[in-house]
Image: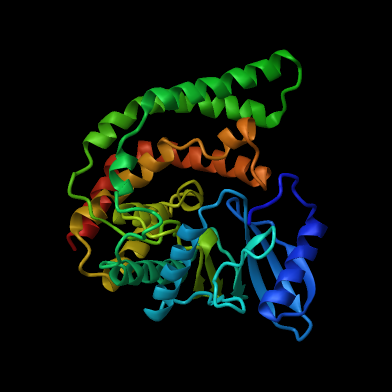
Length: 357
């Protein structure tokens, strides 16, 4: 069943989750707390009467639950391969997603650790090692039935530059209307500046795409490997979370997104060393990776940032669950684009050396 057309309050949602956990999981709940994380699902921390804790994902109406079940199976495969992570808790019928109520949920063991958005050298090495092991373990994983067999890698290359430009113009028009009405704020000023810059940067996309080799490896990957989905206890990686449904995608995407994460690139001059540390650890864990994937991962990361309006698009068209965080992330990602464009040749040289070391 899906969510009702009227969204329940946080308190109502918490009561419904407590009822599901008691009746379907045998977990008498003491407290349910909504967590300020996640955009695709609403997430909760649950404490049971016996002190046991759990993490609960509530999937919004319209979610492809078959695909989400395949994502859960992928996380289980990673656990079997020795990648640290959370174990899903099935309900009394053995289902990994419970749909017995208006709230479709999955329930997971609670993992200790902290999200770190600017990783230390040991944390970077641990993340690179984990990603390498994931890619090695997923080399022969077929695409999931729910996601189909058509690779999304080619779709990623097919950028609708005209449509992207039109969206930028639409957002700029909304901001201009706010300015004219005297309703603009500080974010409008920053959004207007960055969107005007982005409009000028979009002309770089065709040449960057043309320079990408056709033989980049596409296979099942994590799909959302980034610091926000990693938990650390000190320098130790305690969990890799939130695998996406198994659809073949670029190895270079997973690697580049993590090696050139905006928080690191936009923070200062040590981002070259950070990328090198992560990629060296990745290659040690996955020596079979093709050199071309390593060499291209920087340009893939740049292209992904360059063609994405994530954050600012939501601000003006459909606000996300935690829009202030999305606003900050847009500004951070835009700064990273500026840095990566200015250091493109140096990044290519770094990756060529790492790919052939």
